[in-house]
Length: 111
Length: 118
Image (cartoon, rainbow over all chains, first blue to last red; front, top):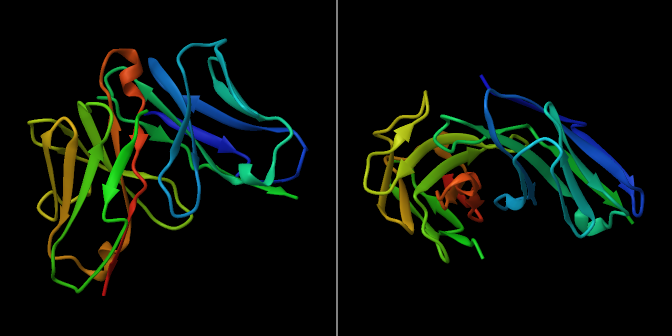
């Protein structure tokens, strides 16, 4: 059974203070690892898809990396508007494209 | 690109009535659509998976006669909550996957529908 564990559960940063969010996963036959951002009362917003160990993707202040056991979402010089819950999810071969989600990391960036 | 809409964004109804929620992929064709439910401070809970033109597959514990799903076209899926009760009050979110090759696993989410049953 797929398992996705995100840490920390909550993270408070000062504006400009860089940090990383962790997503550890156990899955047989990883097809993809996905990062989403969710604001309160809204649906998740797609950020990245990673497919194989060693892959990296960047978007503005965010950079996602992938190893065989975990993924990191690095946030460089965050701004208050980066405050949100960040969700990690995986899909595996034979999952009919279903995603298994972690419980999320609630990020608060203080001005 | 990859925009998914949901309608309505919120709905209040009386106990015993039925409510229909629409999910549309606006700029791509979605082979597969998914319906999730989310409670406050919790992650998304998959309710069902639907493929265009076929019956939906429901997750364990989800009543298929209560949550009717129709995926009539490659851009539209509907969720009907029948005989709604207060315990059905929740945030319902749909997603759509393009379904082409490896990148087809990426799901794009709608903005969600807040259902309140009085």
